[in-house]
Image (cartoon, rainbow, N blue to C red):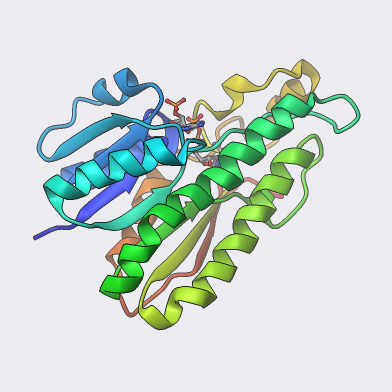
Length: 241
Ligand code: NDP
């Protein structure tokens, strides 16, 4: 019997593609996000539970996970995918935008890990895949606070991986390059946005199709439990940075 998979940020982009591919392969799913109507619109059938959960609210996240576990059994894979990227320069970006990114991208990941890790450690089974970014190991101009948040995801993932590896729990990380999702739609700094668009044009205007990231996540999870693909760095071939 296939085990429960929970995905945060399943309403668009990578999360929605992961939901589709795991659903097509018959996994019971807990799909989380704030815009639950967008998750409903994916039109998935079978064992799918859709719940509102803001990853910055651990209580809400935990409640949804416990509810899904009571129906489908323990979560065997948590994908901490929810994230925001608000571009801007430190000397002019609002502290509110920094906080949104750090709360969502770093604390949101920690929140999810804290909910599922005790059970996974006890069962000596389970996988957590954290969605970081190439901006999690190298700098990009106009991205300072985002880079800080994703370096955080890299650092905490490797730390916890070492801590729980002895209990047969896998911590994996995916570091995608630029992709065609809704991520840029929240950027408020128009000059940073147009520089990003110019950069995209330099790679032919088309970046990663999120479905290939979803396929990669599934491949990583499908490896036997004794194999941990610790980190994948995936980008459009034409991305030069
Ligand atoms: P999208 O904007 O398409 O998706 C982001 C998802 O995160 C949405 O489903 C959104 O759902 C969810 N989300 C945002 N904030 C919260 C929150 N507080 N609580 C719960 N869910 C939240 O972007 P992507 O698919 O591109 O982003 C997914 C991940 O991939 C992010 O971590 C991003 O940093 C990372 N990434 C993206 C790259 C890209 O170029 N697209 C490159 C590298 C990494 P809702 O608003 O409904 O809550």
